[in-house]
Length: 485
Image (cartoon, rainbow, N blue to C red; front, side, top):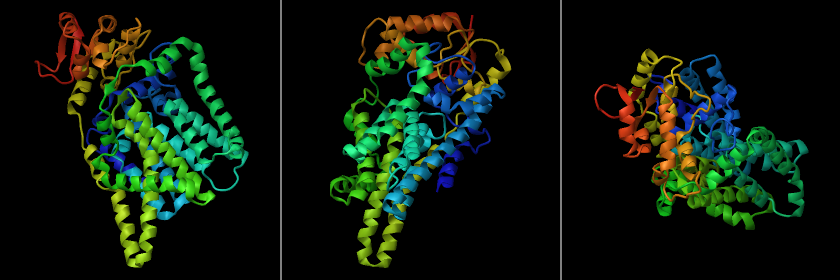
């Protein structure tokens, strides 16, 4: 099943244009560019804005290291296959923990549910945070939920994985809360001390050196920014909830809800040895949903993190339905087993395959033009980091702009003003003035739809007075390259 999940994700790269023909999201371009710059000596927080802990930059470093000897586009294309491999490992870990807790039906359904989870498949085609967060959290769960007494080495290993997860994205701490709730009581919590200490030590080792070089910038980027940033994405909480339980995952959602109800009952009424897994995944899932509903910003790709707990709960729900069917005879039991296995991956698998058919020929055409007409050492500023990556370029300059979106929000909030909406923040005079300085310092700019959105009606005439459009010819819109006059 893990191999099948890898194929489902990597199918998006089996096109004449290769892995780089598949669309690149803004976030994955930011993370890969930041990891590549880190290997070149440009440090997050000190040299450029990065609004997450640095764990992902270190964990994606093997792929980013390829840019030291290969073209950046080639390196990223190879790294996309690595991301699919991380997704396949998540499938294995989800199935393994469910199988061990509730049996083979639970394990197979959990693996299928994760493999066919559309949002997870989407982010596991690139260098996002969620694949790393999920594989570390599921690895932690596999160690934490092993039945019987835990050796000190196992508890420390679980803590290392958890500390790495939190160093990738701070919501990883929710899995620590779930772990403590899974085994409440003084004795159990006393045994958890090595795990907690190992998690803290790992987090300190990963984050500490970079944070110590720029402590105020680290606090500004990772803590203050996330706490006071303006709202973005879907604001309506009911629409968020609908997206979390979307019909594109109908079968898996129904099984996971059945599993969640079962877990809530078993958390208190099952034999003691059966309670930890039920408590753990019910708590992790509920806390994740609550976080997404409470967050000021929400995009549907965030649901990819819910796949880690939701798929395991779907396995629990399937095992309960299969056990109930056993009383109706062997034929009924086999029919129910086939039904839940199909429900776990339908219609999600169809959406995964469909999403893999997307191609961006306009970005490929732009990258060819840049390679042929833009000098390799010329300053190239891109509002979408992925567009520059497709042309084999990384951010340049003494203070490279890796994440122009977050940089503009930081500039807007630097005066102490607070904004309700992101559009309002990027339109602030402080953000526009800083953006103009960045643009004026570069010879070439890739504008596109994102750049048009981030420039105000007042800044667009200023931009067109100073830059001339080079590609494509005419005023056709889309992804375009401009040169300083």
